[in-house]
Length: 177
Image (cartoon, rainbow, N blue to C red):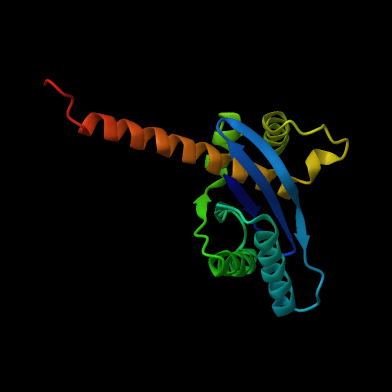
């Protein structure tokens, strides 16, 4: 399964593409989409186009996006909500319905601690995906966060399958009983 993880931003949006094969996880691509246009409308179009190209190139089976953090001011929240809107539209264009995870859910899935700091998340992402340590600061937090979102999706999908299997086993009557 190929998963696209996205950490939305108005000027810099991190992305991470992860492949899960059984219990093996592999980073296929990661980076950031940066918008440099002068007007908000142009930035949103660049973001839409960038996500659209990512989906075309990597053909993910699933997508995940970090939900909004409510601690930002209202103006920032509006700008970020617009960015998320065009990201969701680009994913929807390809038939992807992304799962949303809060920052605490992502941190908990990757580090075991919903209050982990950026450095802890970056370290665990590098370890889980076998990435070389990068001397630059934590691979840019938006990129590390996007890979963490993809890892969170991979872990929850696996858990969902185990729960479904367990539910099916308990609801199926056993022969001779």
